[in-house]
Length: 128
Ligand code: AMP
Ligand code: ZN
Image 1 (cartoon, helix red, strand yellow):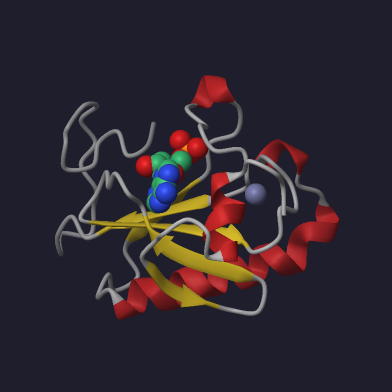
Image 2 (cartoon, rainbow, N blue to C red):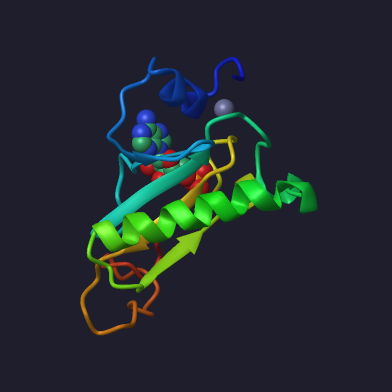
């Protein structure tokens, strides 16, 4: 737990969240400001690293667990294998919370493709 970290606060139950799933080391909750019909954040329960730039090979098992949970959430949300997983690393990329997290975005429709137009509020610019 890192002092002042809002996502550590969510894990601790000190900050309210809509938690929808968890596994041993990962928790998933809905983004408070959704950028897609389905927008879920997946985070390690522990404040392992503050951004993806700090990830190393030793984090592989944790990342596998996280992506497995993402896939099961996508199934539960009816995304049928069609979704995006995005990670912002560094404030210049749009990262605002410095506890590693992955955005799971989907639900744009059954066409099998996401909107490609930048600025399209249905999902063209998913996260910033
Ligand atoms: P990033 O910009 O990649 O750091 O993503 C941070 C995300 O956390 C943004 O999409 C915010 O909407 C989201 N967020 C911030 N505070 C909360 C919160 N208390 N509960 C849920 N999502 C949050
Ligand atoms: Zn944290």
